[in-house]
Length: 320
Ligand code: APR
Image 1 (cartoon, helix red, strand yellow):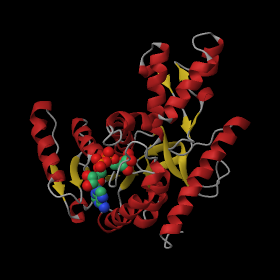
Image 2: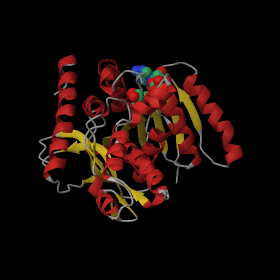
Image 3: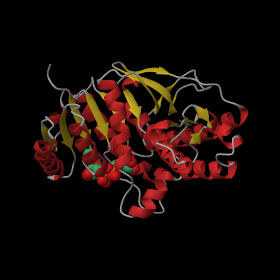
C-alpha cells in the first residue's frame, strides 16, 4: 500500500515539529507548505537528513505552491501568526482569518478528501472559518485544543501527586481560551476522580483550584517564557495524536474543537467536546451530563466563542 500523505500548512515552529514527529512515527510522507520561501524546503531537507540516523522511511518536500498538497490524506494547519507576550489568542483574529481564507481555498482545490486539523488561533473561531472557506464536510474539519489543554492538566496533576503521567486522565471542555472548562470530577488518577483524592487527603481543594487556573493560563505561561512566540512541542504532539487516530482508525476518544449541533444545548458551533476520531473523521460527539456549575462554566465559554464567530462575520460578510 502506498504511504499516506500528510500536508502541513504552515512550516513554522509547530509545523516543523509536526513534520519531525510524523516521520518518527512513520505516519506517511510529509509535505511542508508555507508562504515563506526556503523555510519549508529547508526544514523538509533537514528532517529527511535525520531519517537515516533515526531509521524512519518517509519522503519529505517543501513547497510554496498549493499544488504540492494534492491528494493529501491529512492537512494540519498552523499558518498564521502566534501571539507575543501581553497578547491574547483573540488578538490574532483579524490577521489569521485572512490566512484561513487562503488556506481553506487551497485545501478545497487540492485536498478536498483530507482530514483537516486546525491549530491556528483563536482556535474555535479559526476552525469554524476554515470549514466554511474549505467547504469540506464538518466531520472532516476539526480543531486541536482539548488534547493540549488536557495534556497540560495531566502533567500538572502528575507533578502534584508524584505519579506517572500515564496514570492521570483529564477532561477539558469548552473553547480554547481563558474560559476553558477543566472538569475535575471526570479527571482521575488511575480511575479515582480528583474530588475523591481531595477527600482522601492526597491533595487540597486550594491546590486543585490552582492547577485548574494554571491549566487555563497554560499557553500564556509558555508565551511569557519564550517571549518570541508560543508553545510548539506540546501542540504538535497533540495534533499528531489526532492525525494518528484518523490514519490508523484507532477510534480514540479525544477532546477536540468539533462541530456540535443539538448536543450540549447548542444549535451549531465549533467548541471543545470529547469526540471519537476514526477513519471517517469525527465519528461521534460524546455528550456528558453536566452539573449546574459546570453548565454555567460551559455557557460562559460558549458565549466567548460565539463572540469570536460574530467578530469574524463582521470582518467577512461571506461567512454565515
Ligand atoms: N499561508 C501559509 N503560511 C503562512 C501564511 C499563509 N497565508 N501566513 C503565515 N504563514 C506561515 C508563516 O510564514 C510561518 O512560517 O505560518 C507559519 C507560522 O509559524 P510560527 O510563526 O512559527 O507560529 P507557530 O508557533 O507555528 O504557531 C502557529 O498556531 O498555536 C497557534 O497561535 C498559534 O496561530 C498560531 C499558529
